[in-house]
Length: 200
Image (tube, rainbow, N blue to C red; front, side, top):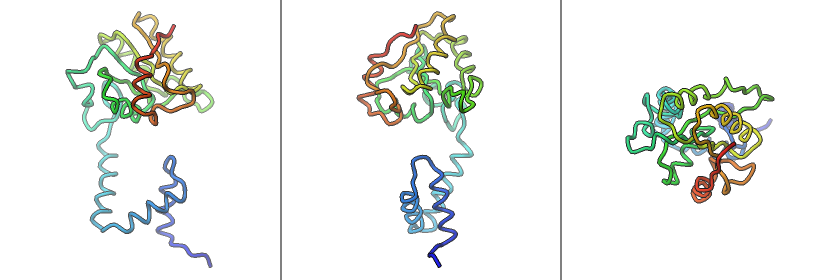
């Protein structure tokens, strides 16, 4: 009979369901958690539950926050005339690490992908248009990943923004085609910002 521990196997299976976590990594995490004290494990579990209960979308930019409006949107020192459009809250964190960008963000929570059933109505595009209509926005930076879906999304949104007569730019060199914003280093992201080009 093969050696197995049903309760531990279930825990490992839960970890393998997470992005980029393979079976070996899941086993290491599971056994590490089991080596912790009961209080430490409880704190770990509680932090997941609390984050799930408290985290919500910012009413303005749609990133994750514990409050109605995130700390970026509520910061008076931020340039509200500049909106950087990204795919996910992780991308906001990546750009914030550069400490070079002083505008605001707008999180789409995905990219257009008709094959996967992701249509414009599936994304936070209406909320972006509302902001452009009601705020003094001068430039929208399309910072979606340089993939087929990312490019298609950037072009689609730029066409929607054309009637507003605002500047719409696209991150340029620095991020190679097929790469992910989330995993790009700070220097690469700064160069991408500096080299952004206007979309027709």
